[in-house]
Amino acid sequence: MSDVMTAPLAGDDAGMAAGDLLVMLRHGPHGSSWLREGLEAAMVAAAFGREVGLLFTGDGVMALLEGQQVGPLGQKGSDNLLAALEMYDVERCYVDAAALRARGLTAQDVTLLPVTLLEHDEVVALTTAFSRVLSF
Amino acid sequence: MASSETVRTLTLDGRDIGLDAEGYLVDLDDWSPALAEMLAAEEGRELTPEHWEVIEVLRDFYQRFSLSPAMRPLSKAMTQRFGPDKGRSLHLMRLFPDSPPKVGARIAGLPKPTNCL
Image 1 (cartoon, rainbow over the protein chains, first blue to last red):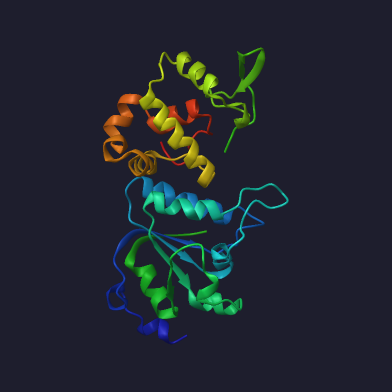
Image 2: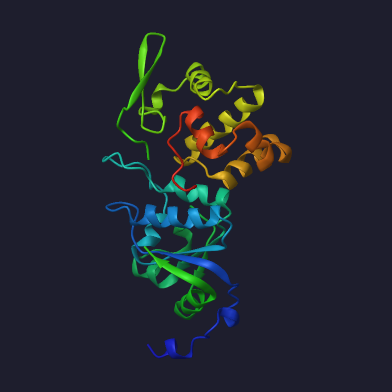
């Protein structure tokens, strides 16, 4: 898409404050441990005083819907991990609005965390505002 | 994550209680206040009411988040529950020298914290 080329290089124009680590969460809460691992990586960085941001994109947006508890397989749910983010002072949580739309979801469906919805250009700006990006 | 391998056992009230290689409970349901005293005594610690405050906060944290807290969140949880003086790392370090999150988690019957060195 052509708008990638014109996106601001440093996140300033989109009002993105700089940060140390952006963790991108691309997987849903069940079926793999990607989401959990990503959230734990974010918490480790935060526990060491880093400024951490989370970007929920792709199936990762499913983590923000209610009801992500322990399933029939007995694996841990992700809802209580999300609840713990606040205790780790991870407060910058963003959602890829296009990923929500693609799944027929709206901002009203995102109930587990206070989040900021970002359009494509803003997602690009976000990734440049953080000095490191880890993709899970 | 709780380790599952019993490396040694403690006997409390005629029951064998399994501990892993680092002294954490294999079955978290085995925990009781009496067991906490026993685990603390092993390390030469005597539990005072101030220790019990931390244990209470640790167990509540695990109940809420399925997670053993690292230092910062433990400190934050202590501040929320008992006020800023109780949340200071100096206070926590004095009660559980070496590493309050690790030592505290062991005595409080939680898994070893994964996100703290």
